Length: 127
View (cartoon, rainbow, N blue to C red):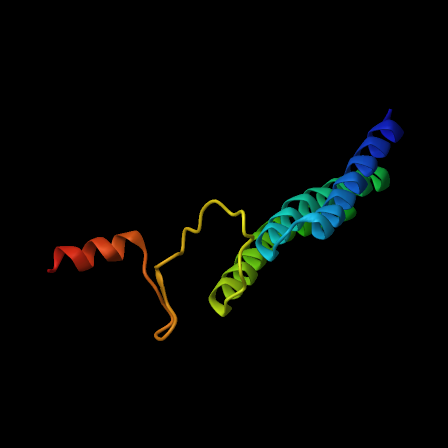
């Protein structure tokens, strides 16, 4: 039974890692590539690590696996956000068929300020 669970987790993990690689090639722009690789690769690595923890069935390895998964879940979205944000600010174009640009008109290139909706409301209320 344990071997079956390990095989399922390893297969699903490898499948998600493969989907991340395919998404990296198939997505039309940087922002979609970041999204695909962050989500699919994180899930794939997590499933592979859980399978390894079950295979070795040792407390020290299981705690390391939990720590690795925790740090991956913590750092992957932050890293993807920073890459996407810096790419947007340096002028990397979005895909032509993108429907929405939430930052359009909010970033000042000269001062490098990013205005949120709340700061615009404050600016309007002081007039």
